[in-house]
Image (tube, rainbow, N blue to C red; front, side, top):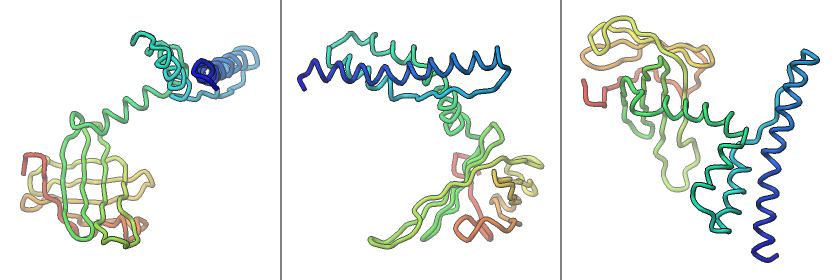
Amino acid sequence: MNKAGVRAYLFAVGSLWPLLSYLTLAVSFYQAKVNKKNVSPVVIPLLGPLLIDAALLMRHAPPYWLALPWVLDPGTWFALPPLIKAFWSDSVFNRLALYEAPGAPRSVALTLQKDKEYLLNFRWTRSPGELGLLQVNDLGTYRLEGTPDSDGCRLFLTSHLNITRELVVEGGRLKVVSEDEGFGEERSVKGISFVRKDGRK
């Protein structure tokens, strides 16, 4: 296949996914308005615009043409807001506090976000050839009782599995005082003491 054929193939296959999204959106709208039924559209994000942009790059199209497939792609409309939310949620701009409990072979980091969500990140250091987990994340929401970082302040973590942990600030350290059963040995934080690592004690 020559270069022109490759461009045509990429453009045709890339256009298929946005067209499918438009078609299923039309069907979903029709079913909702006429038949009062809730039918979810099928939207495929990213793939269509990527293939079309590849075809445009092969034609040396102006840079502003590369944005057009993304603007016209329904999959991008659906995918972009959750991606932006995820980026914001994990960004340093949304971080309230970062605590760490280094150790070997496992270290644990606890991040509290301003939107009342938390992230517990577990990391393992393995020897070459050693089998086992390298990283596990635990996500959920948190509730504070008291002034953050002051002795006696209590922090309650509730995972998305509705399993809870309770921590308390003692002597400038965040200590785990209770933990529900159900986390498993890999994600247990019993007996762990965290130190704040984002510029404040």
